[in-house]
Length: 97
Image (cartoon, rainbow, N blue to C red; front, side, top):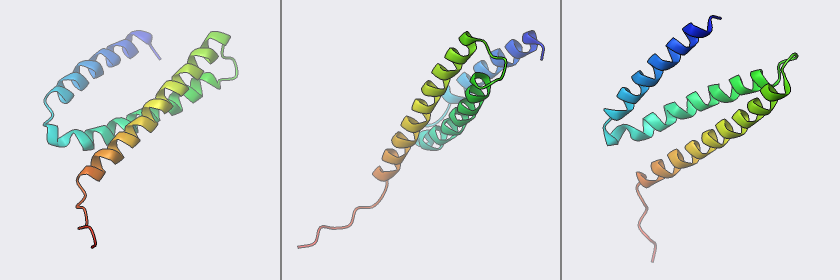
């Protein structure tokens, strides 16, 4: 793949993502958080593919491992935060006397 094309796609995605997130209503942050969790899971798969490549250099393996750890941390944290936010919207049952 042409690296210039990859940089071009990255820059366009960064601007589009920034504009999209900036204009999101606060009521929609929970669904948006779930979407970013899905993106983080794609990052985990990509990092595993990079670090597990047969002919990968030591630098690629180290950076891939760091990417796997960072993306997994982001993924797990995102799900925990989303779960906590959703629990805030559940109705509480009245206390029994």
